[in-house]
Amino acid sequence: MVDSISQDVLIIGSGLAGLRAAISSAATNEKLEIAVVSKVQVMRSHSVSAEGGTAAVLFEEEGDNQESHIYDTIKGSDFLADQDVAQRLVHDTPYEIYQLDHWGMPWSRRNDGRIDQRNFGGYSFPRATYAQDKVGFYEMQTLYDTSLRFDNIRFYNEWFCTSILTDENSFRGVTAIEMKTGNFFKLLAPAGIICTGGAGRIYSFSTYAYSSTPDGLDMAYRAGIGLKDMEFVQFHPTGILPSGILITEGARGEGGYLINSGGERFMKKYAPEKLELASRDIVSRAMIQEIQQGRGFKHESGADCLKLDLTHLGADRIK
Image (cartoon, rainbow, N blue to C red):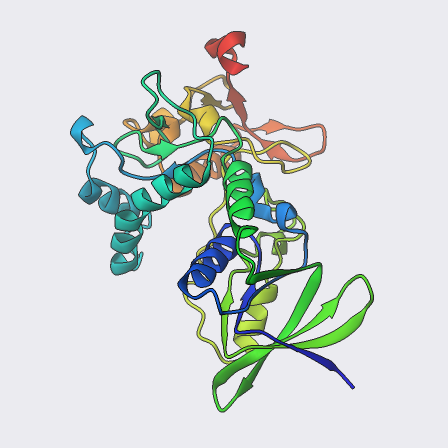
């Protein structure tokens, strides 16, 4: 006999998307019972690992505008992105930045108190809002703290969802294992939102956490839910060998150089205007090409690599 637990909305995943969905659902109707189900404790969700920033047009009076942000987003996808989605993202993000600010997000700020922004890869204007080098951690902490204000949000931490339950092509819930006890449950609800993130750990070397496996994608596929653009996996250009721990894009945003074995700042050949701040796909392809053409370094682990040089920035700026 499998025990059943009934809720009104099931949110699978407790990262930034999952927490934001939970807050929005709970605020819509305080009588709704919201369940956030995650295979890890909330603050171990991989969203905490984001270091660099969140792009948003905040100060149009300084020269940025939403049309430019939309274009940068679509151009960065080689014009393959869903343009309606890109437009919605760009239009809604400034509100979300200020909403996080209202909820207590400790954004890094200018001397006049306004939210600071810096330049990142693929931008035509510095529009990355950031919080030191821990933007994901602080965004997660802010959303988690906010979610705890709602009595109708319940967390099922360390519950591993295994399958989506359907009836006549309608969502009915999920099956899940409570990892502490090994007990199997049916979590039932008339509505569900899948917020399980990426699948970077299908690759042997990755900046993703070990928890970033395609559980949600697998469940959706088996349930007959359409998946889109599965071939597009973004690789972050810079990480630490051999662990794969990410080196924030902020290192290049602050002026870091990518160097080959000849001491050459090679991005001048591939993106002479943007250099190290070209979009990630361009930087990644350039790095692979440099290595394939014999201009890489050999790491002590045996891996081929290139170097990120920050020495010219000085110790004070790096700190």
